[in-house]
Image 1 (cartoon, rainbow, N blue to C red):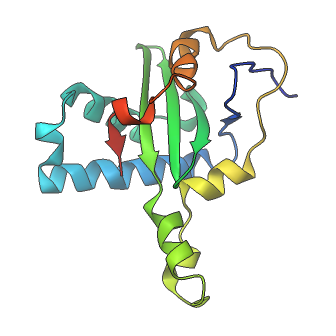
Image 2: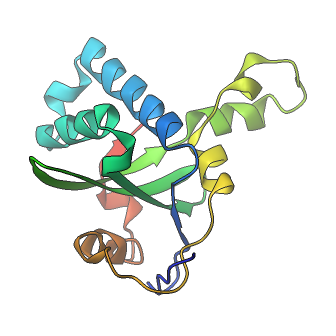
Length: 158
């Protein structure tokens, strides 16, 4: 059953298929940030820990929405809800795997073509159309997606 998401210009997808793959992607990025120390100088350090919580949560406790921008960018809005409470967060995800695939399109045997990336997950899931019940807490994040110069103002996770 599809849900409606009239937000202006952006097409939102509910990441249902491949949610565990999404979590693995986020987990790898979080671990990279921790190994390199990148998380310690981010403008909003709390965002790192919110993404970490998303990466290790039980998939059935997550709602992941995404919309696509040019140049392999995605705006992600995520909710973790369990018996301990609720956490909502958002970030811009730069899909470096999809960019590398494009650069290596003439090399079909290159390993990058075997890695699941955000673009794959976005394409595997359907656009949200219909009712928006249950998304009220994510609406604020979704409305930002249509703001002028939104991508330039948002922290990126890549």
